[in-house]
Image 1 (cartoon, rainbow, N blue to C red):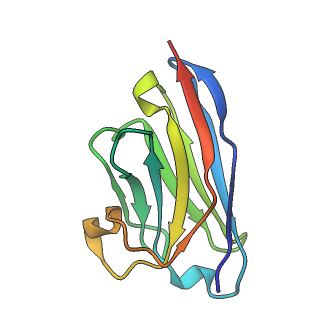
Image 2: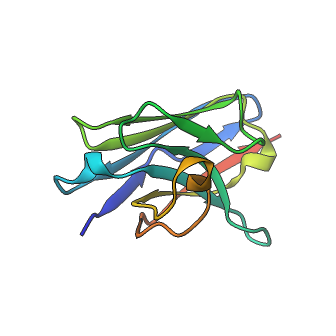
Image 3: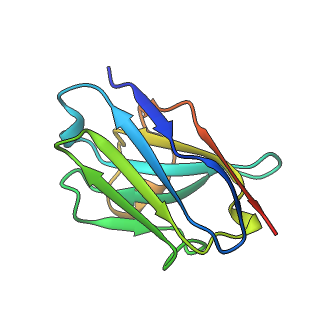
Length: 125
């Protein structure tokens, strides 16, 4: 079983940046594709960014392309999400996920086997 723990959320003003981290246990971490999702009350859960298991191929939702960067450090068992040029629409609880039954850009869809507890991101205008 993989356990995921997110950190790095917080409150920033429009235009600010945050870097989320997702620490994972388990020696099979490097085998998994991983992703970041976000959920804001009243909205559907959105796949924000995903990365293939080898850590080189990435996918992004149109809403964050050019602003967010996902990366994966297999040596440290950690997933990152660098978020720049934040705006109030980015306000949400952010979750990391591991081990998807899908591939390619379908990695932005739910269905992952493992989820973290979430970290809150709040962007004020």
